[in-house]
View 1 (cartoon, rainbow, N blue to C red):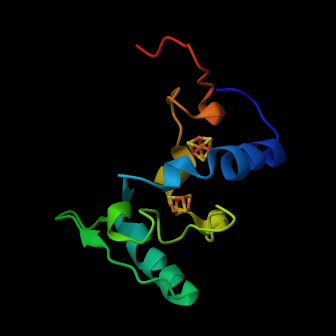
View 2: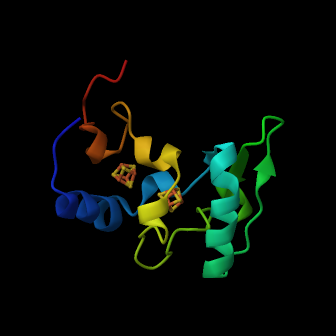
View 3: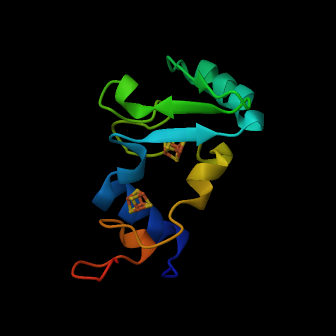
Length: 114
Ligand code: SF4
Ligand code: SF4
């Protein structure tokens, strides 16, 4: 993974990519410990949240269920995460490998992604 300053990474994510990993046909998985805090954050922000629950107690948020097909925590104008400092672990871990279209992951056009 390439090394970027936080400011440069934010510029790429918000202004160039427009939060590609927070939009589209994606399902965000939450650990059992993250479900209640995520619900609290949504309540605080006035976001209409629908969390699916797994038998193990975790949760999932399907972006297709929301206007604009995006995470309910995403600011649709600035493309900033509204809970960035407290975002779920899945969001902190991404990207773990080169992902097509994601400059943050080190992916570049023409790269062999096999
Ligand atoms: S991490 Fe990658 S896919 Fe996600 S917003 Fe940033 S550049 Fe886009
Ligand atoms: S919680 Fe934040 S970083 Fe995670 S998908 Fe939603 S907007 Fe993106």
